[in-house]
Amino acid sequence: MGKFAIHPVLQEIAGIFIRHGKQVFLVGGAVRDMLRGRQAQDWDLATDALPDEVIALFPRVIPTGIKHGTVTVHFKGRSLEVTTYRTESGYHDGRRPDQVTYAACIEEDLSRRDFTMNAIALPLPRGPLVDPFNGMADIQGKIIRAVGNPQERFAEDGLRPLRAVRFAAQIGFDVEEATLKAIPQVLGTTEKVSPERIRDELDKILASPQPSRAFLLMEKTGLLELLLPELARCRNIEQKGFHRFDVLDHSLLACDAAARDHAPELVRIAALLHDMGKPLTRALDPAGVWTFYQHEQVSATLSRDLLTRLRYPNAVIEGVGHLIREHMFHYEPHWSEGAVRRFIIRVGEEHLDHLYQLRRADAYGTTGQALPQDFLLPLITRVDEVLAKNQALSLKDLSVSGKDLIALGLKPGPPMGIILSALLEAVVEDPALNTKETLLTIAGNLKERYP
Image 1 (cartoon, rainbow, N blue to C red):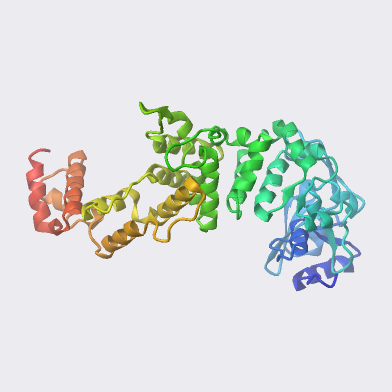
Image 2 (image 1 turned 180 degrees about the horizontal axis):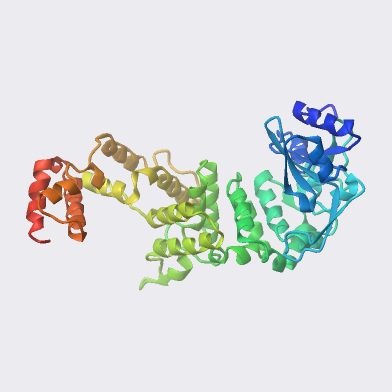
């Protein structure tokens, strides 16, 4: 055990258990990460102490899952889930056990875990690993293998199939053949899992270095059709022009590119979903070429439905939809400065960087080849030049306000909004007009149309 450096806080916690005659083990992802040479982020402990006994050992304990034998210990700035050895039975809702029975030993507890790589225990403060299912060998072989019978493990918890493919993308392991083949048999159990839990797993997939690994496994096992049917329909939707891939592979490549670009979640989701409307908008033109007119609008609508179904926050739903609607812009060098300003206004200054990232990901997904270093640079340069001038790009930037128009004799209401929008459009086209005197003159002329 010399190769593992046990954190002093863990050693101190272990000492408390041992002084009271109790065993304690580090379990789960922390052990897996340590065996992979990674620093463990979260600590989960298993013990023969009953929950009430754990509560008595520490001053700050929250009974987070006491019904299932789990409490959360707060100790020296750390939060640790501590669970009494247990076995489970009956999974009516496909996620939580109907019955929890305390187990006699750590080996019995490990037998209920999902994958062999997560079924290894490290005795604290030190001791030989407890590895009854050869999880260390699977970690060395980079294999995700269910503990025992995979169909039984997946039938116990419908989220486990999604966890299997998520780990494939997250840590780059392969799902063992029998484990993978069991997934289509338990889709009915996965279907029972709450949308929020599905969303959390999808978030982890999207945050992984290569999300496509998981999504391709989802397609192979039926999880994609079950959970993201709008995306699954993109398979075999061939495209035109420079596109080398069908819509699904293009979308997955775009998502991978966004991940490599270290794009935030919003952009990764948009990259994955940005062309979902193509199956519904595809048509042959007179020349026999596939067209996808207005697919960005349909894709944005579908993304709203999908993300709402998975209980994503409204800010994510709106942000993703906006990026998808705007991703088809076509910059030309002959754009006037006014056209550049209108582009900024339409996209929103706060969304520009995200839209650039989405466009880079989309372009990579077209051919799967590296983009030129100056890709988008002409547009970005012109946008930056316009922004540096601090010209009016919104109503708040105008040299007049609603109060000024009221003083001119206008009443609050729709006509005033129309006039303010017209003033902004005039200033966007010609920033020199943005003086109070000039705008009041223009507003006075417009007032005759909107009495």
